[in-house]
Length: 318
Ligand SMILES: [Zn+2]
Image 1 (cartoon, protein in one colour):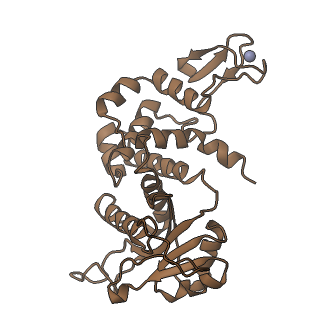
Image 2 (image 1 turned 120 degrees about the vertical axis):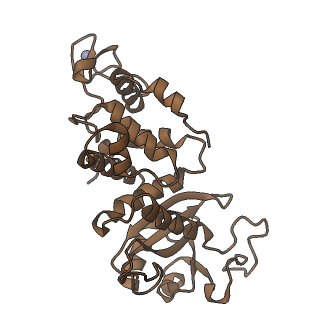
């Protein structure tokens, strides 16, 4: 993937005017359409008001309206810098770091990061198809007793159920993950039926909650981690033939496990643990980053594009 360099960022987003213009372009790639003139008319930027004015009728248009930037007292240059920082590394950036680098208060930095995460969570509601991996991970939580290992029982960790939709070539196409109270059947199976198209093939480990999937209209196969099995050939359910000869869709859950350790590592290392109340937001941020990691578009561009349309999306939801 292309990376957005710091030099490039400074060149393109150094002023409010540049940021507003960029936002307007993301929202109206074919020119700003004036609702009064009912046409894509010429518009002038009024920098002080962060708006554009129609040359024909004087109608004003606010590119930030409907986005997380609307009515914020923080300059867009700072907002864009926060998004840039979140896009720069695999695990994002802490509010503390944003406070240090931009000079906004910790409270403002924290709120900005949360709003960016909320925007990243929006926008992709289509059911997953084809081959989907599912797995649970346990995230965060401090050891209950001092000196105790961070792993396993005795620690309070929040379960997260993750889904990875594979692309044609077996790579990660889309990731979704959900913070849950437990990993019982009644919790996990509805998440799958809500997010995965019937007829899709689901790969899991041998955990018993996934057993009914085969009777629920899904193809289901699993690896047995307890037997040190991490991948096996996929089998066509009707013919019994092995279908993963080219090595594209073998039965394994490595992609979703990779996502799980990414979240666990990031939450611990960058954010020093997260309040379970807000964990979903962080998980959404990681899912967005994971879904877009192998794409052509630079992460920063992908994030900005999503943020520019996020408010509009929720406005059209039932
Ligand atoms: Zn007009």
